Image (tube, rainbow, N blue to C red; front, side, top):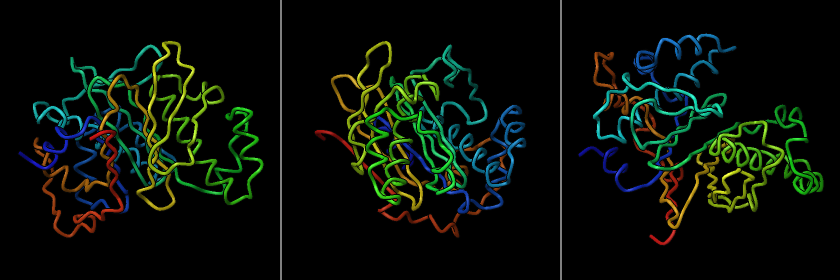
Length: 275
């Protein structure tokens, strides 16, 4: 059994993050080959090469992680997708697997789990984005907290709050329209936080936050019942993942020289309540 399959069986939620600069030229060709015609067209419409590659990485990673989750029973290219009535992407095949993806300038993230509503968001921490996002996306208490901080601390907390809210709203399908009504409590914590959401079904949400890559903030949210999911998040080697899981006529890949072949322990996060 491969390492990916073993990890998929040990954790309820798997989060993979790809750093665009670490992907080889051969892997980009293979990653694009995995995508559907619609996905490739959307990628081509991105404003910059960096955004295009971030998009390609996110959608290739999505397909590869879904294939790993079903023990390779479905080839990465075979997956098809639809949107729910609230606009949330979901697998079209008959499966209990849920997923969510996010990409920012230079990184891509995907979360996969079974029988869970999942949301993930990753953002680059920049002064420009911070200065342009309207304050109406925050509740009055959040806005007061942000306004009371020195500029550097305000920017840090701003992005931690932003990705937390985005992850929660992507998990329940509300999207950007509900950002100002949803509060992520205690998002100062590095690895975990409790979260509340005004979702109409009153589900309980769990939120994790992770800083595995400098200058980026990532948040993961899912609905929980009696058991808190066991989560694994890590920076993944897209070159090796494609070589291992992309079996159908893909370009050959050389993975030995990839500088993330040996993953720094700081770029991993495991969070399991009571386990």
